[in-house]
Length: 291
Ligand code: NAD
Image (cartoon, rainbow, N blue to C red; front, top):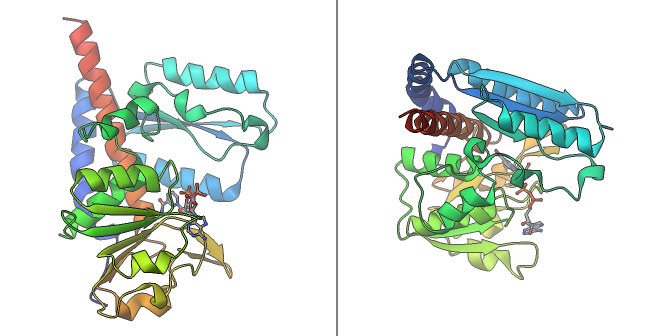
């Protein structure tokens, strides 16, 4: 393998810039502030949130967590979202997914104030991307993947890119972004007949499925020149692993992201970038309103 595409150095290089932006916004009267609603207390989810809190402190943004009991009534839960949406001190917010089963009928992503939509799941946010406008909020995991590719000088334009997984949070928006950046994108999913047929032809393979050891050496071409982005986060044999059988592929690729330490931290970094952007937009709106 030529390269392990780690997130750490890249983030360490870029985080100072976000901190300076955050300080400048505070000086102008609006400190970035991330508000999160969490229902229940699943330890894995709590550790994701702790990580987001740590990143907020690295860029000197405020962070608040509203931790609600698992059995909270729907109406009370909705009141909390509304309060967060209307709280002028909160400049970005989201509801941590997944939610308990009794909320299955709610699409909370559409209940977040689009101005504070740091996750980038609101249809108003996606609509802009669909129209080819990448200047606004971009969903965090796809944004992190693009940042990682670009920072490592990995060409996107003209490349054949296969994405496995078509979820609303990863595969689908990522396919729009990469297409906009002039890649030829193939989106595989659970009904794709023969995934190897596509992966063996690709320049870049991105797996976002949630099945350990799904992608093996047999999915690759024999030239050892492909790039693999492993989005999966799975618990397997008491370890965190991706979708890719790292040991089987590592000597047969040009570059690969590790799990952990690859796409995961890039996702949280993108969340911070989005928080700076929502805060900037809110401040600009306030300034326009006061003219
Ligand atoms: P999801 O369950 O919403 O979607 C999974 C997708 O995989 C679906 O589109 C489905 O069609 C496809 N799929 C299922 N089985 C398949 C198979 N056998 N072959 C091909 N495709 C198949 O999942 P998600 O929320 O997109 O998350 C996917 C994985 O990525 C999970 O492991 C999740 O933990 C991880 N994830 C990581 C990050 C990160 O920051 N690294 C962010 C989001 C999700």
